[in-house]
Image (cartoon, rainbow, N blue to C red; front, side, top):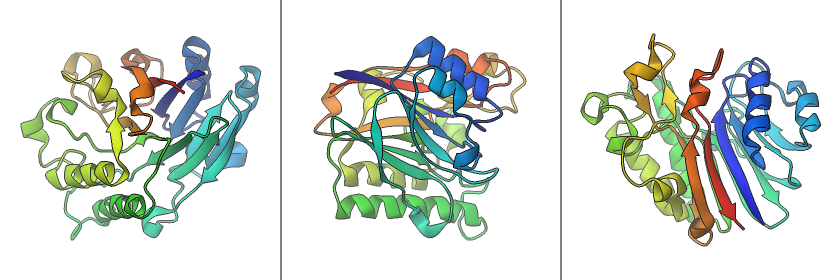
Length: 262
């Protein structure tokens, strides 16, 4: 049975509860993966979700920071929750659907402002997170799996508004892209979004700092949908819901969707 999945950095699930419910009403994905929930799990508002038929959830949370959740109208069970780089952060949770597909939801550290781990601990944490993720996939190669989330890296030249100007900006530096590609290679992951939309500029994030983000269009593709090689061909209908970035009091990220015939 086909199912549609969405991934979205919501930047506070409690502050933007109504935006989550609007997305679910208007787009009706079967599974919604949220990052940066900024809430303990027991404080995530569930009443509205349940009223719309989203009665299943696995999540990891903490007060005010980070946090990941997989919300679903399809039955699922928790499959894993790892603390990569031993940061003590709620950045990963995984769930298994009844068809056996495992969905991994990641919120990779943003990395701070300076792309040098010697002077910026946050950048080092980001690289360590990706290194441990790569090593985990080398040790236990995934199958029948989907990985989504705010990975905080725009890997391709056309994933940013200006490759040249962003080469020394965190999220598009060569060392981050190298780590990103090593994680993909280690797990045998395919980029479902770019398989569907192979050419052209494509963004999922626009800074709050831009007075008119839409006109300036200085975006980056930080949010990703991957699948393992054994099911990648089942993914299709990828899209970024850019208009959601323009909703009232929005997240700075837009949701990314894909459908899987599994």
